[in-house]
Image (cartoon, rainbow, N blue to C red; front, top):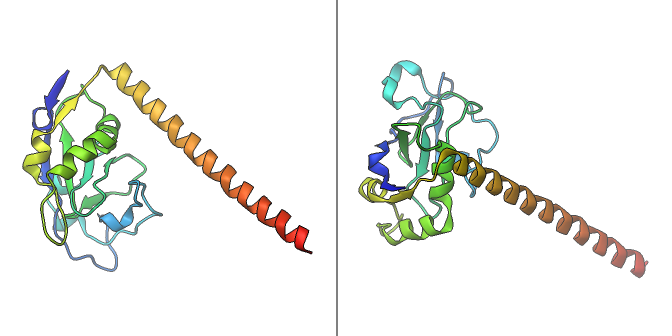
Length: 185
């Protein structure tokens, strides 16, 4: 099944806030993530619950989409994240039914074909951004839940394989360098 994102989710922009020294909520910004959308460390709470309406506080299974800049990644907000509010760097995508897994939607938005499609519609002179209208009209392929789970498992295994290959290459490089140094001595 294919449908547009607006038919399966509501999309709202993140909020502008001025962080404090301490607080109850984390103000999630693009800088809290690496280039692959992985959370870096454990950001500290710097906003207060009382300053935000309930609709702005992120819920488990919301999908965050970084709409500004060169890397437009998506992530599913999960239970290991601290209580947070998204900054204006993000769109918050809130799924309206259980026909699509949030992790699958994040994977779908991150896949190269989707990224290429979105980049075609990015606008802006100094900082490119993707509009809410473009995101809403994006067509999403939605297989059954079992297929979504299998896709996510395959993607996870592929990521693990990449990390293992990178470690092997790093260790191999160290070994070769050490052998060369030993040969010189």
